[in-house]
Amino acid sequence: MRSLPPLLALALVTGCASNLSTLQTAKPLARGQFQVSLGAGAFVSAGQIGNAIELGIDQGKALDRAVRNHEPVRISEEDQQRMLTSGVALAVAPPGLVHEVMLRAGLADNLDVGLRYSGISWRADAKFRFFHSGDGEEVQENARRSFDMAIGLAGARHSFEGPVFDLLKIVKLDDFKRYDVEVPLYMSTDFGDILRLYAAPKYIYSHTSLDEQLVNYAEQGYDVSGFDVRLPAKVKSEFVGSTFGISVGYKYVHVFAEFTGGYTFCKPFLFGQQRNLGGATLYPAIGIAFRNLAPLRPSAQKQPPSIQDPRPD
Image 1 (cartoon, rainbow, N blue to C red):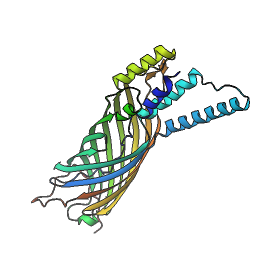
Image 2: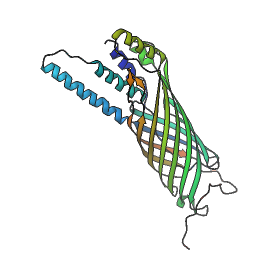
Image 3: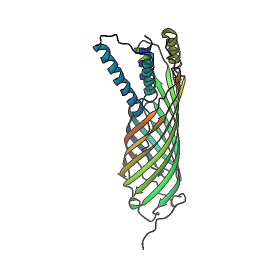
Image 4: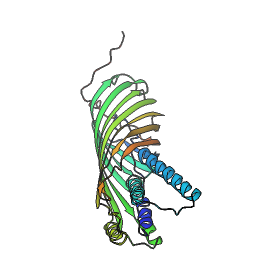
């Protein structure tokens, strides 16, 4: 019994909020063009937060009944494991604010790459535009309308340091690691260089490694308490969802506002049986991007197969 509160504390402070932002459209930067952006978002694991609130309400009612009936307060093994399940779920995908800095560069026609830093994670990605439809080069850029589609591929590494565990005087931990692979599909419509609407359906696969000492400590808790509080060494999860956003700006500066929603699938074998650590996931975000003008080229930039909009005579 005594081992359960420390383990729950460990689980609750293990992770850091995930970054699900897009903050870019399907239109890649031109070759030689660079962009620096700053962003902020809020990761909301709505499904698990709802479960935690429900658990808190249930325990509150049980405590009230015990006090009114002058009975000792007891927490069953099932409820203790529910608490631990909720704690680990929030540790794997904790809610919180996320700040980011991203640098992008155009490498070739229809291809740009980016590097993003979000406090405890680094993410590298590439984006290739495979479809373009809209006005041609004869129309000025600030009046040019277009529709673009691009495919992306990204990889991210998260690292969680554990000095807070030393303060708890429980056990010294090294770190936790998580790796993500993301495949987004970008779609956007440009109304000149001023207004852009975009969407990005995405799939993210995540692999989280819990600290070996924490896993061993959980094993010892099982031996001491008799309760099955053992933790898995690896936790895998998948996110399926989409981003919808708007960008407003002109030439050098553009502002982004977007909302990402989807579902996280995560069902590891935990506390003696398979547990659902996933649920509905939300991520609103805002950002601002600064870029240089596209370098002048002797010939028009190559475009993927396109359909020119019919123009009246």
